[in-house]
Image (cartoon, rainbow, N blue to C red; front, top):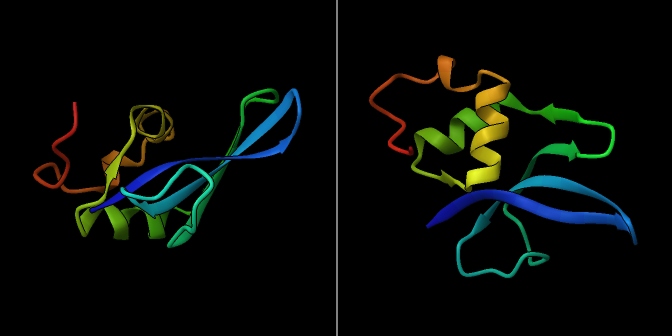
Length: 88
């Protein structure tokens, strides 16, 4: 199973995160399938590769709760057919 989740980057006390598609059995800094976005919580900046995210969601990838909130804030789910997403 594939998940869309955050991968920590940056230095001490200056965490930034990549949003990646990764196998559910991998650890947080494990080998990812594809980088699909970027999130900086300190500057509150988000970059999303929407076509790739939609591709993974259509194939059944499940976002984590934090990634789901970021995608909802960016209104990515409006581009996805309503029967595709089954995450609360």
